[in-house]
Length: 93
Image (cartoon, rainbow, N blue to C red; front, side, top):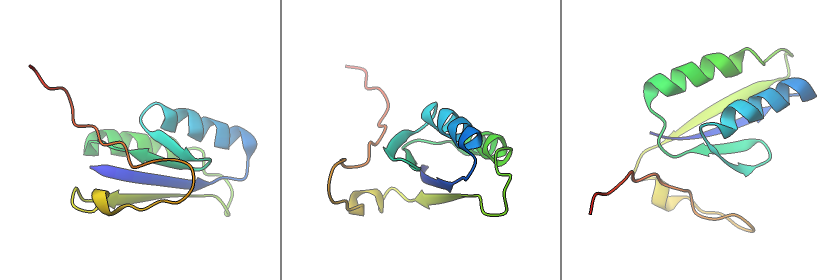
């Protein structure tokens, strides 16, 4: 599944740790927005549990948006950046 993860975390240390966790599985497209092109459900649940440990303030939040394969080509953007990276796996030739 294609997942967009956005966060707003006030504590610098917690924010750094969230970014570190997300960089391991996702592509950073903005300072607090990551795209996960091929996130399996089991991996998502594990990641979500890890990230929830860093939400401490009542103002902190992490949002997860899931896009179907048909919606991904409809993603639009302006400015720097590019189209979402879609992991199509390996092809044996």
